[in-house]
Image 1 (tube, rainbow, N blue to C red):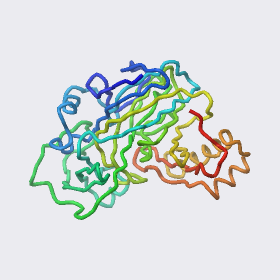
Image 2 (cartoon, rainbow, N blue to C red):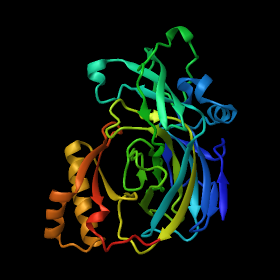
Image 3 (cartoon, helix red, strand yellow):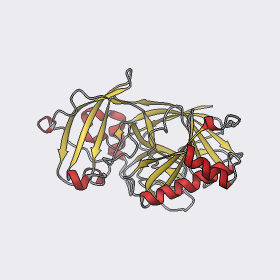
Image 4 (cartoon, rainbow, N blue to C red):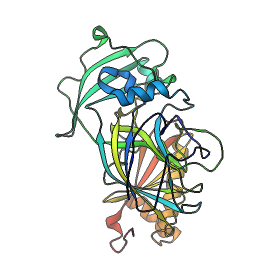
Length: 342
């Protein structure tokens, strides 16, 4: 089956995961879902980042927080149960509008150095898969993203040229994607966790395959926080934020040992760890990678530890989402006899 899930006031939830939310759609394992996801930064330049559908969501959805991210869903998958793994294949991620926004925010990694919030708006060339900054402006009133859905009145006089002659590669992806957490409470969309959520790995785009350990019946997948580009670290506090239309396939897996979010690409398996500090995130990523190498690839602990030191790249995913993120990258070519079923 092929389903269409638009982003409307009745199909989005703003700033949280909650297993008590009723599903917006029920699908079967193996179904395709064409999904709309909206950036919560559309108000940074509403003349460029908003259309009528986005404006309707900003106007009608008043239950917001504690996080800032707009999420489409939840999507219930028939038969999914705790202990299963939900496989999400990302087949497409296409910008809805030809502009995106980057906010250098007060939670950014270098805010103590630069001491200002600044918005930079980029134009997207989807044929060349490049972005070019068109202007920037400083924001000096209430911190811009502390009130989710803030709409900034366009002010031509405040818009200054930015990044002349510079291009950035577009790599559209979903910054926040995850299943409902087990506890029956509203959980902020900001910190990532074992349910997934705000992982902010730029590889979670077309051609990527996410594995989420199912926490509740139906899995209740939500998708949002769309990005069109991001570097590892996401140091300013945000990525290049822009609404995306996606095509997903969801599959229930009962043959995988994953108990944490894992991403598969054409070449790699990436294991995500989180912590209050980078040291904690690194330790979590290392321990989880050790576990995956033993349970999934059949290595002994001693062999896995040696392999990790000589062949696994540990990289900072992000440093701005309350919980720090590190991912361990396992090159699948190191295991020529291994294949992922499904």
